Each structure stands twice: as C-alpha cells, then as structure tokens.
Length: 390
Length: 162
Image (tube, rainbow over all chains, first blue to last red; front, side):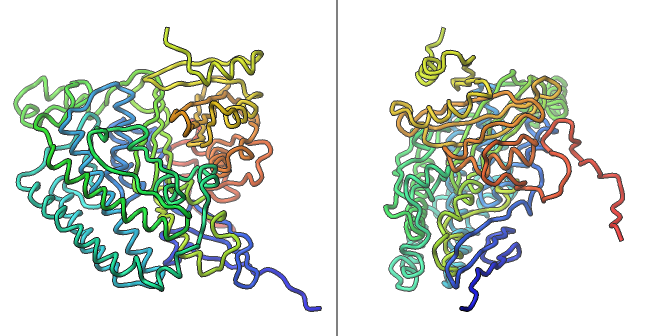
C-alpha cells in the first residue's frame, strides 16, 4: 500500500491575501486543511513598551499606528481611558465631533475591507469604487486634522482643533451620496452567484465558539450575537444617537460581509445625525492642568506660556489607579487598560487588540475546509497586522 | 461604603478561606485573588448560572518592579447576562507559574502566550506555550521594567557568526 502523508505548506508572510505580514502554516490532506497555525509578530514594534517611556499626550500618535485603517477610533479609545483615569468631562461638541470622526473612519475602514476582501475572492472592480469613496473621507480628515492616514486629531480632554470653515457642507454631500454608492456595491456582490458560492457556508463560527474565543466586532455579530460596545457601554454620547446592531445568523463569511455592509449604512446615519445635532461650544475640557492653552494666549501671556511648556515637556500626573476603556472599533472591541503609578508616564498601557483575538479563532474557522476558503475566511475577519503585532 | 459587587460577594462566599480583596476605582471593580485559587475562581465565575462570565475580554501582565512579588496577571471578564465587566488580578513572583485558564476560555490561548513572551510568566497546563510576537530563541522579556526601551544590544554592532 502506498504511503500517504500530510503536506505542509507555508502561506505568507509576503502573500497578497494575508492582509499584511501574516504567516500561516497549513497542513493539508489533499485540499482539506487538517491544521492551521498562524505565526504573527513580523510587524512587532513594541508599542506597549514605547508608551511606558512617554508622557500621556505623547502616546496618542502611537495609537494611530495600531490599526492604521482606523486611526480615529484608536485615538478615541486611548483618550477615553486617560480621561476616565483623570475623571474629566469632555464638552458635548467635542463628543459629537468624536462620534462623527469615528463613524466616518468606520466607513473608510470597512471600505478597505470590502475592496480587498472582494479582490481576494476575485471581484476586482469593487476595489476602485471603494477607494474612490475612501478618498473623499480621507480628504475630509486632511482638512479637519492635517493628516490622512494618521490624523492624531483627538486630544486628552477634547480635540486638536475645531472643524474648519465649510467642511460641514463636504461631509453632508458625502453622507447624501453614500447610500447611492452602497447600492453600487450591493449590485456587484450581494446576489452575485460567484460571490455567494465563495462565501456562503464558508468559515463558519458558532455563537458559543465566537464568545469562547473572545471574538468581537462584526465577526461576533455575524455569528448572531447582538452585542456592540456602543450599546453595551455607551461612550462619547453614543446614547444620543439612533442606530441598530445588525447581526447574521449562520456565522459564515457571507454573514460577516452582510453585517459590515449594514454597519456602514448605520455609520452613515450616525454621521448624518451628528451633523444635524452638533451643538455649539468649546471643544476642550476646562482643565488647565491637562489641556494645552490656546496658541494666541501662549504668544501673548506669560502664564499661558509657562503652562504650555509644563504640559508639553513634563505632562500631567494623574492619580494612582487603573482603568479600562473600550470602543467599538472597525474590527471589534478595542480597549486600553492604563495603569498609573501617579507619575507623568503610564506604568502600563495594555492594548486589547480586537484583530489579535479574532485571528486566534481563525484555525477554528478553517480547519476541515478547503484551502481555497482560507483566503475568504481571512478576508472576512478583517485583520490588520499593525494591531495584532503592536 | 459602596455596595459590594454581587460577583465578589459570591466568590467570597464560595471561597471563604481565600484572601479576596475588592476595590473600586472610577466605577470599575478590581478583585485581587491569591494565585493558588485563580483557576477555580475563574471556573466558578464562568459556570455559575447567576454570573456567567462567558467572555474573557483581556488577559495581560503588569510589572511592578522593584516591588515583590513583582508581577500581576490581570483578567478582564465580561458577562453578557449581567452586562458587567469584572477585573481579577493575581500577584505573581518571578519564576512562579500560574495555572492556565485556556481550558475555560479558548481566548486565553494566545493571550497567555503573549504574557509568557513579553513578561516571562509561564502558565501551567497551557497546551502550546511558545513565544508569539517575538521569535523563538529571543533572549529576554521586553515588557519587564528592567528591560531597556532601546533593547539590550542597540549599541553593539551586529556581527554574524561565520
């Protein structure tokens, strides 16, 4: 009798369908995957270690570089944690603007996911459509903050600056045009036979497994768990906005796709609501020990100059303690666990990365399925290695 | 005196001989439990029908060097039933192993590997305890406080062995 043995193949780290530097070692029995072992860490930069050597304000730019498709959401999670530690209240206008930016960023992040996911499976057209709309959002970010990919727009206690003149009109025209674009994407995919064949009943994850593996975000909701940090622990005035949590039922690749599309629609609706309800007022908390003074004051008033110098060089000293704050980022629950020893630098900044735990469940999804389905399963959990490796 | 968290009351009732301390900061409950009981307490929190902490949101290490015992392993649990988060902490000295909770929550598999990788805390009964972010054969544990930010060998020239 001929000897049969498993074949081991290596996928990545430089593979176009692994969405970054992910390496998978696949053990195959013919075309069926017996065992999958992800190897990560190729993009490890030691963000948690770097954060311990910086003052609290200086950590914000590091957070942009975690999940680089969702910079505003990362900023938000970190500043919420530090604000909780300090116990400061952020003005309503800043909270609404944070929501607006976070939701625009969610649309942009999901657009990248949709384009690349469809590209992996073979639908190339969509990528160009998605990047067209994403460009509109990045232009808005550039005008608002000066940065496109890494805006660093949020500050502890509020925002870097208020909206520039005339930007509301641009955001409004984006919000109005977006539902039409959504129709374009759906025409191409939602009932496309090839798309259905590649995504239905592929990479299934049950409700119980998803919870046990710590999966969050659209991947958890695709499995039918109606849970969202924005509803469970509302932050930054999310309780003022009306939106629903879309869920799937089977927990396959198609359900995750469907959930993300609906999420984009709701994100668009939240941006619209935040534009309509946007209150007037300050964008920074009234806490002179934490918040930088306005630039004109620094140039004209000696006390403000000293204050600016103190905060920029020495930072501030929050009370001793530890807090955890999380947001519903594009990939799932992004949390920051900040431990303070009362000095001007954090003792520990732990980042709870959603993609890390979602990826750890990937072998569970793909073991027993065909090798061609690996690509659509990886695409469907929407990982970003910048966040997994930190 | 603030009201005692229901889960804390329950575990204190269930484990009367165990020194369980609970504090509250900014509305978050921190429960410090002895290392020897961590696995049993976790399993109790998971299985108890009133509590049902079915999700391990996060597991991480903290280094309090030069305090002794220097490390803390922090478990952040979430209950869908009560919509509640609970933070368990346990103090761990250098070289002491902790019981793995991987058999309760699969999420702990990678999270414990990460703590092992970056802090050098080992976990008993973990099915696959290897480094995760750094490569096999790397020396040192970067998130320890006595590990320099620049790395241990940043000023040494790299000369490969021939």
